[in-house]
Image (tube, rainbow, N blue to C red):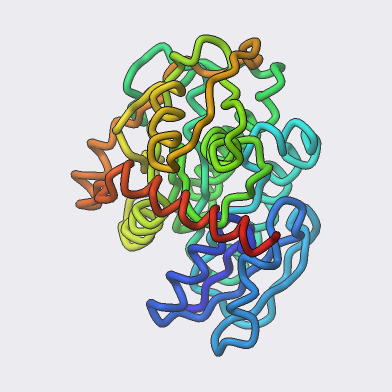
Length: 313
């Protein structure tokens, strides 16, 4: 296949570029490098079958030649990023999705939307199944990301129902691994950076809020399985292994052999109290479930961050 991956220089997008090339597909990566990084795909530049386009998909999107699949992964994805780039986050979720769906229609390509567990907001149902409609504050500080993704899902389903575009929607739960930005504000890179420097680990609130963390290789396998299915409604992909922020920080301190202690800060606005995917649908429809144990995934991630830190010094 010839595949367009928007957000292709981001954390997830760059891993998808690697995977699709290894599977023998031709890849066109598109990214405006607002939060993506050129170094994530530097090893692919010049490789046969890979093209990079520096472009913002909130504008009219055109890609020369045929396309078989469009994977729309373009968006700021961490609270730190989408609070700074709040308007652009809304635009890329709305206009960007619209532009890419239009391109899919012109190219007769399949369309894959990267949505998020944040569409469930601060959930009142636990774990979260796809049928749960969510509990989102539309005008809260996190609403720019939550509602952009919810709108993108609605737009995708509208194009599927009205004009027959062959669509897929994934709701991605917390994912981690190599190539995350150390300064992106999410818990794992922040905790790892602090632990490697033996600095205080910053815990917001009481630290009892939970997340379920999925290693990036598992997520990519789930994405590929969903691509090959014929299911059009949202599917949760994530690891049901749930832990509190305190437990996560303790694991990182232990694995990194850090001397860090905790520092408690006021809770973040609209921070979800729990997050855990119900992956029954992924198991039944796709035959997918995560394989990488969190301890192993965190060890790999910490080793990558340690090497990246040493390289930069």
